[in-house]
Image 1 (cartoon, helix red, strand yellow):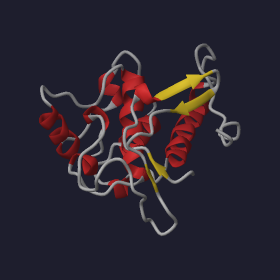
Image 2 (image 1 turned 30 degrees about the vertical axis):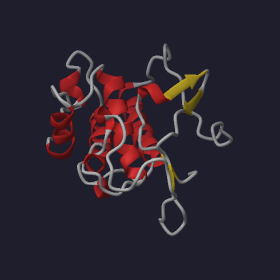
Image 3 (image 1 turned 90 degrees about the horizontal axis):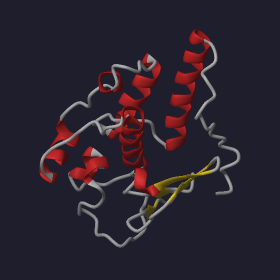
Length: 177
């Protein structure tokens, strides 16, 4: 909503304080303007920046990024949050970047066979991890909507989810943040 491309979203840069989610470290961020122009930043266009474990395919290639690149990083983060591991691992940075660009991610259900996830949640995470930015959710809000819809379908089918450990996200409360 603020038209900022973070370009280095990862768990270390996302903090939960009570019920408010805060994003930190905007050192390599760029602002998007209405005509889809980008502001200057501390990094040059065409250069790779970010944390390789969370970089979108276009980011790995040094191509132009937009909010969908951050959606990809959120997809990796959500995958890791649900399964305890990232969708891609390699022995070196170039191998990891190659995997982001060329290999399909493991499914979240394959990552945690002991904890089955709803198919709609699997689909939302898979969409966020699409190799083509044009196939991903266009924003973090759209990703949130997909996840909430997946969980509401699951709750309808399974009954209410247990409340222990679950912190609900209230988009209205976070508008001022």
